[in-house]
Image 1 (cartoon, one colour):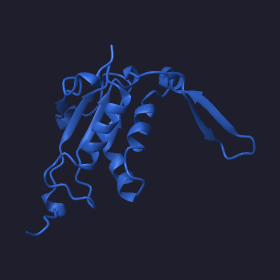
Image 2 (image 1 turned 90 degrees about the horizontal axis):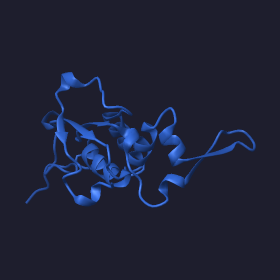
Image 3 (image 1 turned 30 degrees about the vertical axis):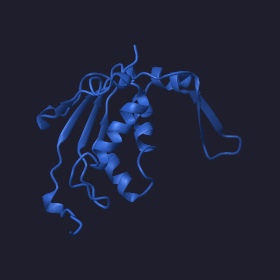
Image 4 (image 1 turned 135 degrees about the horizontal axis):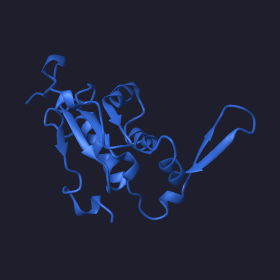
Length: 152
């Protein structure tokens, strides 16, 4: 039996809409990363971008378990003494809460050129509105997949 490999003209990309309201961040990020890579398909080919386009709405209402909301996130500005930090809760309540979801998904993908290309297929919005109605995305209900995906 020979190994099946997809060709670029056989790739079928869909649009998926996920509502992140009340969903645990890590579980959401793993589901989104799986969809971006295309590992949910039977014809998965590791060296090709065959995943779906994913739209995540209500990213500001994502849930965190334990003390993760108080966990600091560090970065460096590039200048001497330029280390900065904010807690995840401060980022979620700040100007760009969608960055928390983007970073969680990015860290669940391998660190190579292909995953950077696959990250361009992810769109995250803090509110409930998104400009992708013309693509008629399919709704993926993450809450009903597993009762552990939600936190009340």
